[in-house]
Image (tube, rainbow, N blue to C red; front, top):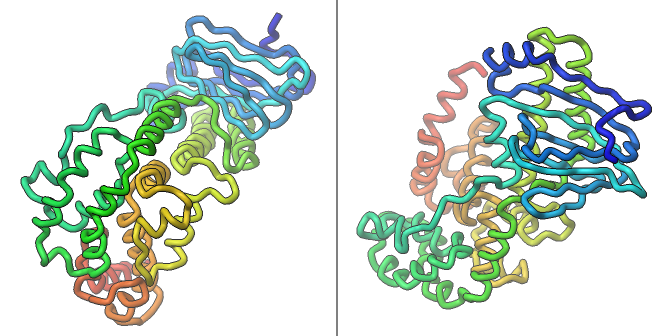
Length: 384
């Protein structure tokens, strides 16, 4: 027999249904509303079975003990530091471990943005569908710019088997590069190495990455990178609802819930935080070496991975290819130097790894929508 509540030392708040209806029709809370929240310490025999799912998204943080959940015909373990996120309307069953019952902080959320957060955190409903072979650069009839080729050089989409077909047109793409777009020798090196990178793509790695992505498409349990902050957010939610049901308190709870869900979605995007993770190490390396250019092949070798596997994992963790990631790190540092120093644009370009200040300016404008000089003038003119 599962017990839904009534545990010694528990805290629990549930909004009245009229309050829920009113709040969901109001600004702010209409986008994200906490309808229920609680804290169940050492919740022996706790559990719920909902054959038709819950009306709201269910979020449970385990801070002690253990529990399990059955969802979409799969069973998942929930341990300290894990957050369980159950989409609204999903049939499910969860329960505390009988030998080591969990301690949990939890909330139910509704609103127009709730489902978006669920997708970002669990991968539910994720997936852009099959890509068309050769789409992207080929859709314009030519390679376009070196930036396009750099993405191919990353093999950043190598997790998709169809991209192996794209690699067959690499030589033609390289031949159509406009030299005006190839002012950066580092980019030229990437283009020159495309054929070698294509040859290095191991179909077994591609298939493995594809299978891994498919298996990870939906995962209702995520390890919070900062479980203490997650607990603080849920406690803030509960304290706000314990105060009263005024607009101010409901908005306060919504803000704390938003912060938690946004952080969980970032945790999901970053992937694992295990010590020695090769992708995190590669990101750190790029961050620490803004003034040098490191090829994707070199980073893959440092990580002990094939080029195709490394590139696919890097894009999955970063949301972009290696070249673009490094360019954005350089741009962020350049913005800082433009704001905080009197250094010339040429000196700043050199500091962040560009030998040609004109090429640096073009790259800066592509990311920031303005030239370095205009950016500095606009920032200082704003009085910020």
